[in-house]
Image 1 (spheres, one colour):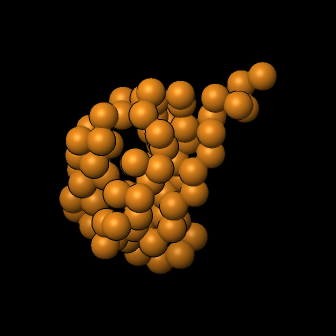
Image 2 (cartoon, one colour):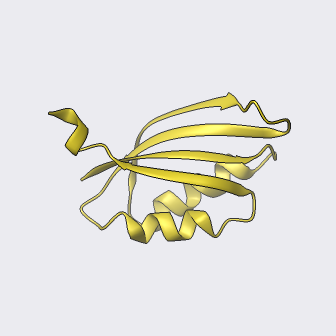
Length: 82
């Protein structure tokens, strides 16, 4: 199953590294990633596509717990490929 994560987070030197670590520890594979500054000052927006046979909520709940994550939206990318 493939899911797309749209994450808005505070712009900190290690925030992307921490998010990637959670993805790896939860058994997901990173397929694509893009990053851009947010319209809100001091924040960045990450768009990631990850895949795993594991349920998405196992990853989403852990990423949401990171203190620099402001907002997270999860889209089932598998269903959008029709």
